[in-house]
Amino acid sequence: MEIIKISKVRLAYFTPIMLTRTLVYNIAFGVGKGLPNEQYNLTSVKERERLHTLAEDELLIAALPTFGGRAPVMEPPLFRNLRGSNTPAVVMVTYGARGYDDTLLETQAILHEQGFVVFAGAAFITRHALSPLVGQGRPNMQDTQTARAFAQQVLETLEGAEQMEAYTGFPGNTPYKPLPPPSGLTPTTNEKCVLCMQCFRWCPVDAIPYNDPNHTVAGRCILCHGCIVRCPVKARTVEDEGFRQRVAQLEETCAGLAPEPELFI
Image (cartoon, helix red, strand yellow):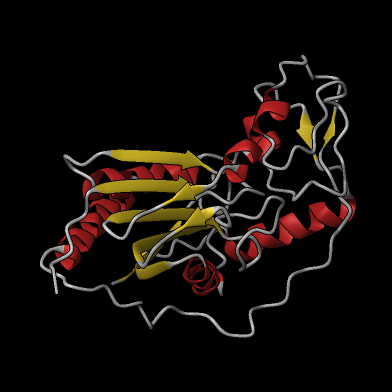
């Protein structure tokens, strides 16, 4: 049996508030030194619609934030247009201090169905999308150094290997944690809006119409908070008392938590 020799690194990530991309870049570039690489920003609807086929001698690095302890649900589905051929893969999950529950395990299963062998994974804390007080200041320099050290571990695992085996120790449960029912809530726009259209450009589910950016389509919005975080004039918020209470409870419970990265390889 021939020794695996990676010819190309492909990076696929979903990053509504950009912090997932910040971390996974350190892993991808650490692993792919001197190798050709491609990256797919799956935050874009158009990018998720494109089909990408990976060969057995390529490496996929997939990254995503957890949504309530699960992989985000959206249309088109995340990672479903990636096709592998027994292609080795690494998964990185980010979360906002509370936990990531079944996200690594679920993402491994999704990629397995697409022809990938997930042999390693990692979980990193980042600022929570709902509140800057939860996961405040993360990722930090130490997280970056850990991501680079993880990249080195991935390289060492690949070197000299004849066949990659799927990792069997990811935390999580099957059946997966139930998805919460749709809340029907969407961000609203206030008088600060300057029609810069950043919210329209960055919405990962096309829930903000170009001809009416002050409106958000409830049936599409996944409350990723990308439009809220990216808005340069802070014109978008979720105006709901129940939601505000939920955020306040999250801050009370998790603002002081600072878990270290978890590496699985």
